[in-house]
Amino acid sequence: MNADKRAAFDEIDTDGDGFITADEFKASLQATSTKVSDENVEVIVRMADENGDKKITFDEYAKFAR
Image 1 (cartoon, helix red, strand yellow):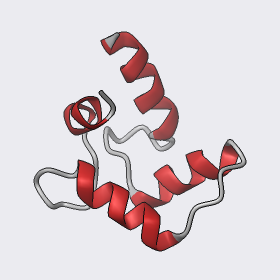
Image 2 (cartoon, rainbow, N blue to C red; image 1 turned 60 degrees about the vertical axis):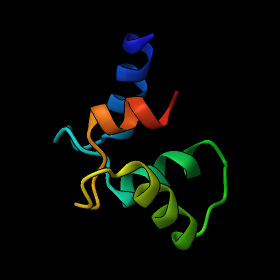
Image 3 (cartoon, rainbow, N blue to C red; image 1 turned 180 degrees about the vertical axis):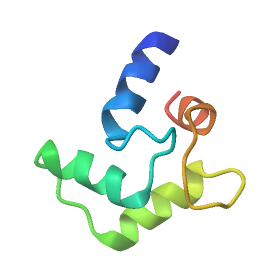
């Protein structure tokens, strides 16, 4: 299960820096033909981002993507 989450995280983290930004998250949604506003992406990132740095770590992602 964690391997699946890691693979999904790595696919979204396109620059490979170990974090998912709002821009990367939005791009991944748009790649699947899901239309989402900047505001909705920001809300989702805030919900997953436990430490408030506006980036999602793998641990934050794994908890959020239960």
